[in-house]
Image: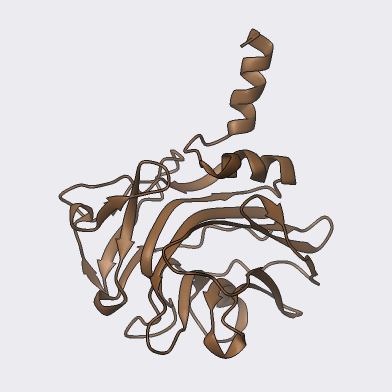
Length: 243
């Protein structure tokens, strides 16, 4: 099992690079629409150390020019704090989707106002689209830890909110991982980019494994959060060393 991507969101630098702490070199670029924007202009206090601040009016987003999630099992998690939902109320937290049909639709994480204002996560396969609810009626100015686990061995999607598993959804087929860019905040398929977040994002990570509830809980860390890539490994080392 490995960490595919880890944006700690502590960047605060005179450049637009969002550093990938996984060691895989999947650095993102912080953009105002399509214009690179220095991260020291959007630095904010995060849940764990720093965070990156997104403004809907500026169409702030992070783009990585390739797909990250595999056709197999994977997990993703992030801390999100909403400042507003805009006039229309539609917000795309993240997506890996560069088209409106076919294999370039991988997944999307969003709030769609006509859909009862809930935060949903959607997966696509050749057999169709599959939806789970991550959070109902989110509040503003509140940190939420949200996670998604896609398990191809059980064909289930499990959402997590603040370390607790929600209602699962079954899916059929293999998750798409076509040539879609990873986008945090906004839509990858629209030009110009639209539906960006107004708020803060911290500690965005993706693993190439279906994490279990205990491991999601260790990332949530009883509400305190952690930037440790594999906190379960750190716990195991302490046990071995008698710490």
